[in-house]
Image 1 (cartoon, rainbow, N blue to C red):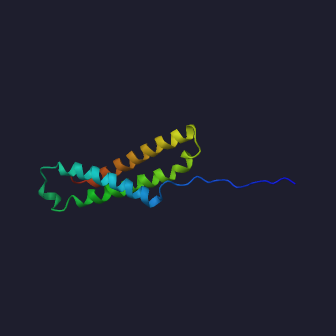
Image 2 (cartoon, rainbow, N blue to C red):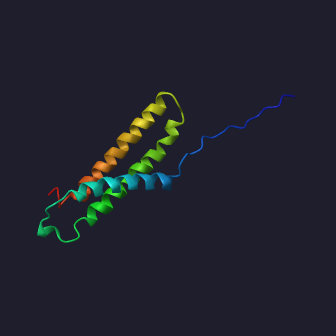
Image 3 (cartoon, rainbow, N blue to C red):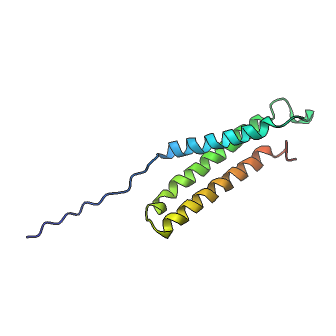
Length: 112
């Protein structure tokens, strides 16, 4: 009789989905805040609260980029060239999400 051990260890997620989304949103919020603090002149047509739109849109896009990074972890755990590909795709996906969020957030105000 041969004893077999069919136990396999599954890779553990270092961070939950919510944590990745919060980190992505926090980075995006800091970046857009620094960008908006440099604005000296505003046009009266924008209204008093024109900064609210980019301060909401960009962190939401950053959270989406963080979620994309979380979902790329399955590929990263496979090791080798797949891990390198997953890291590059995570970075590119986050930058793309941040760029789209910035464009959508600043549309009609700074980028008319």
